[in-house]
Length: 379
Image 1 (tube, rainbow, N blue to C red):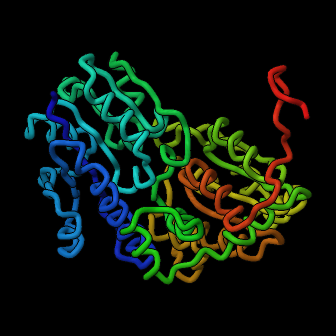
Image 2 (image 1 turned 120 degrees about the vertical axis):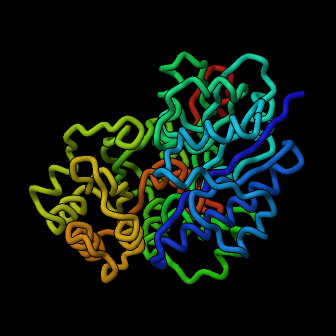
């Protein structure tokens, strides 16, 4: 048997209320994940690039290690340092916001992959990694790894390591990356015991979740989706909601590969201005779910997390960046409900949003009848 280690990387956050909300939610999710992993791995570590509150550290009840603080944090270097220092055979890697909805069936797949004799990597999302398994951790040591985990799949594939993705689903795609993700978790009732306790105490609300869910349940409505959406995720979302969907897929790869092509929706926003932009959306749709990061990036750069998170929650008075503030003010005034977030909103968030829209209701969900294959009973 190999010595299998699970490492949960927890990045530092700022000190605004929305940022603390996300950080504390990630730590609660990590606590739930540790509880699931503990019976199945030899060691669990939390890699914290900054300090963790003493109470949270006690709740996690695993060793907390810190990368070399003499140089700026680099994800790939910290991962390699961990593998060398701990003499790890196989490694389960998680970002602290990921893996919180894993089922035992998917966990069994991860553990079986860790036991493979052949070197290889298994990712929740090859194109934007949140968690992964490495059957031979030492195979990562001679490779140049990226500064952020998103690009890990590309780096290892280019280095010749066999790479595999998990099937896309709510549990593999969902990641706590923004306040919207946590608000969706609360609306759905999903999450482990620690996350649910944390969300019960929290006062943060997203005012757009329920109005958007109302449109998802209405067959006559169109809901516009925009951002870094995988077509498989979009197809699954559309099968689960009653409304029709429209929108634009763009911005994919902006974190993992640095892709910076001109974007259609960003161009419309800049040419029309925020108010007219949302008026246009209201002409074609009854609600919108927007990945705002591609829309508002400037030369590939985003406003600080404090502004992005305040925008997600429509806390306009807390936004310093004038572009993000004017955009969020216009979204709040829009003729239709608009749900704002990041990549996680239009990946795992879409699965959770579809599920949440039907919570407590037993209605005919889909516009799409079951296909006739010749083996079905048409009656």
